[in-house]
Image (cartoon, rainbow over all chains, first blue to last red; front, side, top):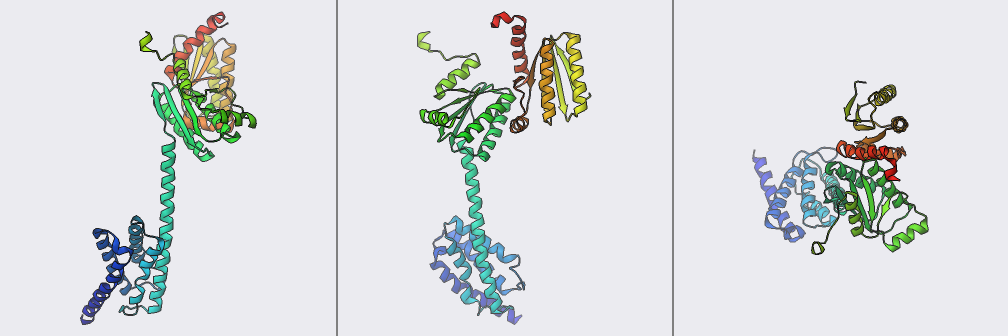
Amino acid sequence: MNQDVEKKENVTDLFEEWLIGIEMSIWGRQETNVLSRIESLGLQMFKTLQGDLPAEGLGAELPKIITEIAKIGQHGKATPREIALFAYSFRPFLKRLNSTVSVERLNQILDEIGIFSLEFFFTNSDNIIHAQRQDLLELSTPIIKLWEGILVLPLIGTLDSKRTQEVMEKLLNAIIIHGSKVIILDITGVLTVDTLVANYILKTAAAVNLIGAKLIITGISPEIALTMVHLGVELGGIVTRAVMADGVELALALLQKRIIDLKKE
Amino acid sequence: MDKTSLLKLGNVLILSIEGEINDLSVVSMQEMLLREVMNTSARGVVLNISRLEIMDSYMARVLSDTARMIRFMGGSTILVGINPMIALTMVDMGLDIKEVKTALNLEAALEMMKGLILLAKYPEVNA
């Protein structure tokens, strides 16, 4: 009992000392509520390090704490170095930590924690990049309902097989949902059209045709037309127009509609 | 046979094919359809495959063959309701049914059929 009380005081003392160091590092510059969260995590860390530790690996508690810390750090724009330094900030206290485990083992655990935090940091970054790429894909291929029965799909950027596949699926589903008869595929924003891209466009046209709609390709600039002819790209059977306005006019004509000038009526 | 249903609407026959259909029943379906075209002297056939789950090369060939047979019998054929996944598979596999007309839904198909029947009746209008 007596020993227990002594232990607790010991932890609090070490914690206070540790806190001074932490408040002077990047972690001290965080907002107050974030700082208090870091403090409680630090205290948890001390308690865990002092308690029963597994002979091998990190156990369940330590990875949880360090994951939290890495998340907070990443949110507050901390570098991986700073996150690892947080883990190592406990090293000076290890000897004084009245633990049941040897100092060598504690050092080893601390090393592992540092590496674990880095590992987490990088996998988390990868996830963020992946999510952003997905968002970008969504943003760069909007499917717009131009009129009853007409869909517009402006393509922007470079086309690769994965992206084309996704765009194709999205487009075909949109055709079914909206019941569109004519689709305008605008490639003004596509930088280059090589044989591969042309093949994608041909495939899309064939699939759209199977579903029972018609594809019009617009936005073929002089440069693109030139490269396509030089590469020997054939877009057999697909209707093409230079500017989207012409495509819109054609689409309306296919639906037996037209735009009139009210002044001339 | 239980997986298909045949409806008659004026001089148009509507055949719906559903679920997974095996090669044998495809052939009997084809025979049944051709007999019905003769019996009802239908001028157009709409093949609705929106409930069809699998399209293989054999199925694609039977469909385009059927369309050609019906053309010999003086009718027109429209394929309707190819779902996106089937369309993608067909394009990837290079299954070609170019000679068969397609429509988005039954409504569009019947609208299209009116024009086709008129065209077949008075070919000189088009000429």
